[in-house]
Image 1 (tube, one colour):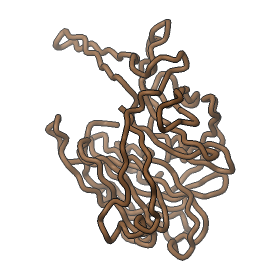
Image 2 (spheres, one colour; image 1 turned 180 degrees about the vertical axis):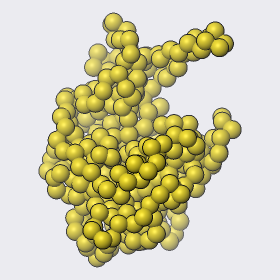
Image 3 (tube, helix red, strand yellow; image 1 turned 45 degrees about the vertical axis):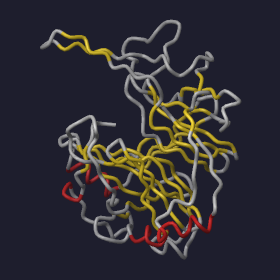
Image 4 (cartoon, one colour; image 1 turned 90 degrees about the vertical axis):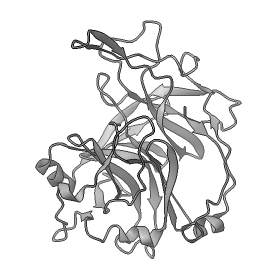
Length: 327
């Protein structure tokens, strides 16, 4: 289930969070029970992918009962929620080959559940391949998503779910990493936030967007997480990638794999950055730091920049070893 809630914000207490270690808010969370399909049905009855195991002569069904990986963000002053989900079952059930995760958007979401929210399919991307890990951001009153970090593909979306490709740019350090390590998959995480603080961000003293990405190692089934910065103006090209984030990992309670962590959100308030993440798919945690400390992550070993003559040498050994089932 997606959980939503609100809390009063004390910006001074928020700024003390990196040193106090105390979360400056208490929120009461409620399941997003008022999320509806365009047919005004509860978001429960979804497509059921099936796979036949010839060895065991068994039909395996993957049953999911709700949305996943929600991203909460503001658009023109109202709350929007993007999420990925298997498609809701329609009158004609699910089309063959289209029982895969897709991206959806609920706009002008009420936080008290008194008004139903309609989840609308974001109509970019493939219908027969899994779509997820899009990064939402707003620019000049228009809703955008980072469809993929490499290439850095940007789509513009409307509240009715219609969307279109608008820009696509490269970033040579990440491209070189991918060329030399074909088993690495570079994907988006969380939301993108606008930052304009030349004092606290001396390594990039100009307005920019701050976002997160993760690198999935398809051989080892491991994750590594990074922040990155991209241009505030079109075509929104990547400017810098940080060194790896120091996240606390944990083992999942229902699988014997290695400890892992997975970034889910990002916010910056009063020169204090908070990166929310799940540890072992069981603990909700936050990496909290001042904005100037965050800036240091873009200047230390392992960071990447597209500035000529100042491109870090990055290889697979620079990517950490957090692990999980694939997302």
